[in-house]
Length: 338
Image 1 (tube, rainbow, N blue to C red):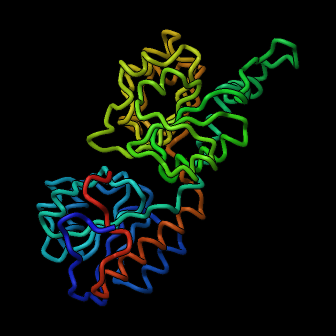
Image 2: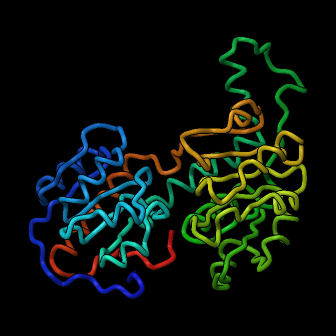
């Protein structure tokens, strides 16, 4: 995918200096060391701003992750060697694409490799919130469970309910395939309608009007990238369109949901529950969320499989090698994708 207005630098860089900001799986780190002049992070702590400034001043390739803020100020302080930002991960909303383009710095990402892992975790949240799995697990661990009873830990079945998917890209479609097997009817909102063949395969109904879909869904799950158009897409008004029995699932980006409005709705009984893998200010979490029993929270682990991390690293390496050979990297990011 070519970044709009930017052509790949055709100068070869046979042994680029590559700086990696976070610790990666050993298989990826070893491969990078063998192929490049790689400066690896051997701790799990994120780089400080000063460390990032020092890194971009001396490297040909920076390999950041979602925890690194690669903003216009940092890019402006980059040395002349920096020609490629090879992001480890699919989302690039933490990188100022316009600032990179202005400096003729190519940005790549790792699309596709985490689709199935994220869809698996999303489906786990879709099941766990209505069935109160987190509450049940805590009850057992507390030692206060008194045994089975007809009215104990009653939740709600998901079969026969309407699932509203916001964003029907790779992950949204993978979630739809899983959800259909659980007996959910599939509804989706996307900027563009899917081909009829895919709709038929998924049994999916397109809603060009997001508000209309939110009003009929029983469970809403978010799978759209974070960018200027999607920030606060699920705002207070749209949360108000959802019926009180609705469960809201977000394994995409925290900034897509107005978190304060969501918490208010959960506290006020205007939403039945939520399943969250992301937050607006992570790793900080609103204390009110921590106090709510009807919210299942996991620590941004939707893509956290060893297989997925290694596959992401392999894509990063492929992008660097293609660029180092003077060619356009296969996963060059389009303008506006974040």
